[in-house]
Image (tube, rainbow, N blue to C red):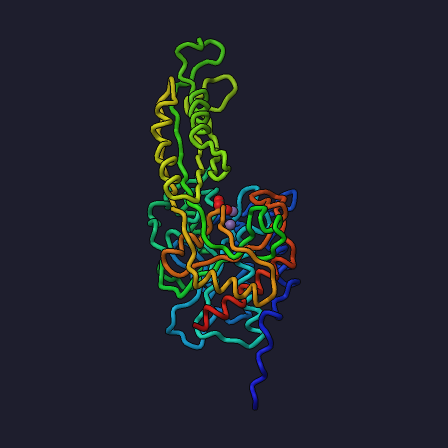
Length: 418
Ligand code: HGY
Ligand code: MN
Ligand code: MN
């Protein structure tokens, strides 16, 4: 009997189902203002993993998890011996996060699987959906931890003894997360892939400003994270004379003022953020004995990333007056360019669908940046309102999320049938 021609899988992407699942996930860790707080390896992360596994149950996917908790759902291909195409993103969020950052990429791949299944299409290569552990780096720094460890760029044992603000060890939170789904087969870190593809909201204003639906991402700028520790001496705020104080807050301010000069950039290309400051003993009437603050520095140009980043430690040493200072770098990734194989597959899919698109780099880092050394890698961006992200006001249109998923289906059919 003639095989029913497979209906066009792209047309079987359901905007409604995708949106409903996005909103159901947003209830996990929901915070006022339509935001989410879904820290990695938390109870909320465990619930999100379980919900994903529940939705995946009818799609005949093979679940696996690696030693750092990266969750894989493999859709079989006609030739199991071929390297898979991997696609996905992360389910953890910032503490004041939005409903779309990360989770969109995971649910877009699940929706692509739904559409391929409904179309009765099996690709040559297996396709693996991945939900990476700890992309955000908020609870345990640095970010992109799961993908870095999976790709062999960092070792898991470097991170197991990290503790969060409540003193919980990463190793213990990881063990609890793995124990929540004991039935999932374990798999080793790393493997060879044919390609990696990550759908994500842009987290910047360009697509919306230029009226484009699809961002064909060409690469990601470099990022460097540092922790600066200023050590002084606590004293009585009323009795201790100003002369002779070793006030860690005052010297931290001197360092940050000097860093602002180092990072000044009239072209508004460099990105410099001090997002976390911890003061001790943190009481109004004691001089601060120590201040620890974070530096998040980014630049698209490798030389600038190195020049300005390498100058931070010496600059801090010169800027302090009364205290001592230590600077530690805990995250370091150079700018990367994505492989034309994947970039072209995304562009061709967008063109084939008659969607408006533009090539663009990513300002945010993503797990794709750490898969790029392993295999041909690319990303699909969709707009988010006013470019707002890492903020409860983050919003993306259902139609844009569905369009990005249709482009994903087109690109997966291209890459997984080569
Ligand atoms: O910080 C980043 O660029 C990513 O959004 N976590
Ligand atoms: Mn993200
Ligand atoms: Mn993020």
